[in-house]
View 1 (cartoon, rainbow, N blue to C red):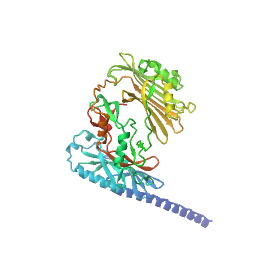
View 2: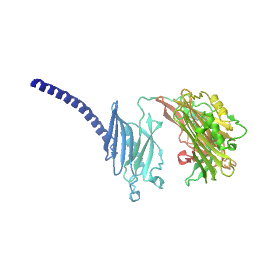
View 3: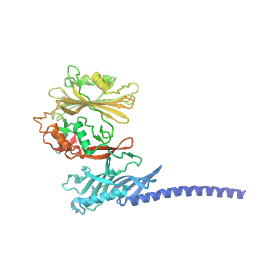
View 4: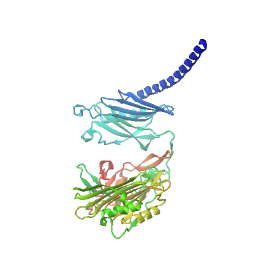
Amino acid sequence: MVKKFLFVLIFIFLIFLNIYRAYGAIENNEIDFVKLIEKKVSFAKDLKLKNYIKEDNEIKVEFEWNKPYKNMFVTYDLNEDKIKCVDYYVDTFIKNKSNNKRLMTKDLALEKSKMLLKELFKSDFIFENDIQDSNYIDYYLDEPDIYKFSFKYTHKGIPVENNTVYIYIDSNNGDVVKLKGYVPDDKIIYEDKEKLNLQEAIEIYKKTFIPQLIYFRYYNNEEKSNDLLAYIPNVNFLAYGIDAITGNIIDSKGYNLNEVKSEYDFKGDSKGIEEYKSIELVKEIASNFNIDFKEIKMLQNEQIKDYYLTDNSSLVYNWNYTKLNDGILNINIAVDFFTNKVIHLGFTYWNYNNKNKINISTEKIAEEYIKSHFRFLKGNFILQKYNSENETVYIFYEKNNEILNIENYISLVVDNKFNLKNINFNFNTYVHKQNTGKLLLTKGEALDIFLKDGLKLSYLITDKKLGKLIYIPKSEYIVNSKTGEKLYFESLKILD
């Protein structure tokens, strides 16, 4: 009996020993991979393993360190034996940069960055440009201590537009203080050869990209609002580039863009938004969504001295309706204190009620829906239609005297079953005196500016994992209609 008992104990022990060896080997194997990753990211010093997860053929690892704080996420492909993604950050705020001496030139930092990215991702990258990053203190210095670069991943020497890697180098010691980026999936199928040459693409651009005047407001460096009349490359500002195979105009996700339809004239009723009482507008909007006005709560009712639209006193009202099994409605209205006229109406509605289905499958139905439901809306509008795999967005922008006012719009978001899920409405009846006078630039002159830097051949990776060959301008900007100055959106603080 005792022998049998000992035999059973030995048998159980051997089973557990085998299990331990098996799982221990797996764990040690993964730890080995973690150590391998540490070697491959040699630019990241003094890091400690915080966490790692094995998913299928990938290991996702997180490292961390304090004094200074450092954090890094890495995704490693076990099958391909290479790093797929890195997100590395070093806290540089604690350094007293005024006492440091610059030891690395920009050219050296660029060369180091390029070599490091090639070694890290086993891929080629091309320098794109210097970038501005207001999250770093030295952004405000005349000669920043940190070089901030962006690079594009390349396939057969052609840059991939929607695959950007960011790398920051400290000029005081040459250390990498930020690196964020990834390489595309190897399953992506890239188009081999463009059918259009550069000159053919330029001719298509000249015919289809007709500069359009737009009006919008933004903050300058002194945080004062400004009005701007500028040219954008095309009346459909979703237009991104030219398909190098078909010659079609595409958006930034690779979808073909429909031509912009003719203007829609919303006649509305006898009075416009400015003539309504604020409470009348709330009731009108609520009834459009079958919402009982009594269930809408007022969240704000106050006088604001320097309202951003007029810089004068205005009465501002905010209402809200929230029922998660029905929908959410937010309404914002501003009334000029002196004239008692509505100067701003904005509302957003999310529809969660499957019983309250609103079906919108065409541009014509979208137009009819707006005409029948928002009788306070008057004016001429141009439709911008945006398609994606899961939804369609219809945006109607106001157009006045050949100027597209991108601050006045109504957007309808429809899911892939054509059900209306979301509405955004924004309309300012008060527009600053633009004092346009005689425009310095004609559309033809604006087009010449847009084409001055030329077009470039690039890849665009679509949602369907296709590397689409496209022609796009070498740099993106809008053009000041009075001065001809190139303006980049990242340098403007656009007012929502």
